[in-house]
Image (tube, rainbow over all chains, first blue to last red; front, top):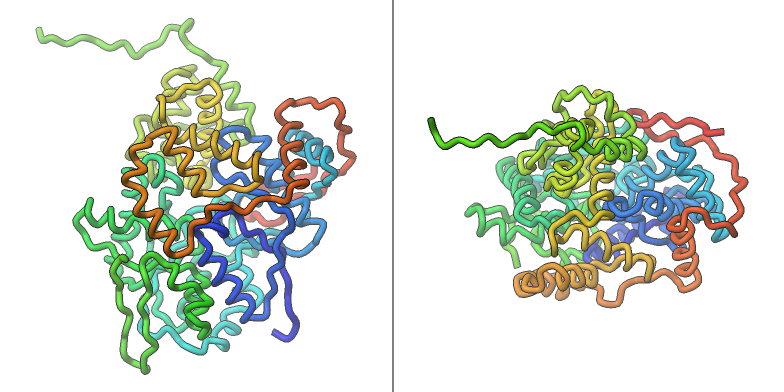
Length: 301
Length: 224
């Protein structure tokens, strides 16, 4: 990476709260790879999956305001929360396809002096890593291969649904970042199955069951860790392990790192810069000599 | 002869409320419900349909026929976690997720949900918080929703809060949008709330080509 590439960073609300470790590790990895994140000034909440159930035009306007601000800057937008990522894409799609929504949103935006053009390009950080650093580039920078660590990739719903990833990339192609880090790729067929989203906090028994289905499958597939690309999936999967264990009488303890934490570990970044201590289920992985496996499934704190 | 009593499920024409289908058809994504094949792909793909009283297929069928009450009072609409499985698989091109959103909006606007049911309360609190600070702080959001719906749950949910707090993952003073931008944001939402703000000049922006990102999904077109 000779020259520094820069992106407009749309953090999303959770990055200041329960997903702070996701943001810490994202910054650490991007800095190490020579990629610059510039926070979108004055960004507002994208509306999440919730605002749409109250008012659809306001929901689209919330996303459109961020897009209009980002268009002024002109850099590619990077959204590490897959809900933000999908909602920004959905707003762009619907504003292009529905003139009546577009007219309303345009009028609301012009009232505050903004113009929406629909030219922003929206990416998830993993897309950017694989496009701008690439598997070869990533492999070349691995200082501490994660040998012996069995990693199940879990993407959740919104990164590739309803909108396909850019340039026809598939989730199976995404998986390849795991072997590039020196870890073992676990065949995890529920990689795009729903984690329940906000149901874990509203209709809890159902939400927890969806989480249980994922954790059970990861355990059966002999995964040591399950890596996520969405901060809400990350919280859902790790926060309810104790309750699920009591409810279903089954050991479902498994660390759930955010993907930049895992990448950062392989890049040899410090545990502190990757905020590994902020995980509710700690990763205990010691770098070992070639050949020996040493992933320690940890217990919930 | 056993003690069977028939429950009449058939509705007479005058009992049907066909306006609800029209409302859904008028929302983006719901236009195609009349071409629903009733194939059941949506319910088959839905990770939550096993917990639903009516599957999405059935909801669309009832909706078209005017069974408004049954549809809007259904528990199923609240179970939709918007995972979009149904939307990407529907052979008729119905955006089932958007249909579910439209039904939630109708239920919320008309107040058709049980008292203290958390999802509508969450949606409203979320909206209020966003209007206040431009961003959402999950600690205060969860606290406000719990206080309004199930205060006793504070007793069982504090351990998780404590675990997050001890790891620096709970933010009591939320990040907020700078003040002038916050006022802008409220103004923008107000314009949409009141529909036709007369002081607002129509935008003279020409619509551009939409995103080129979606091979499978939506094909964008220029709306000249």
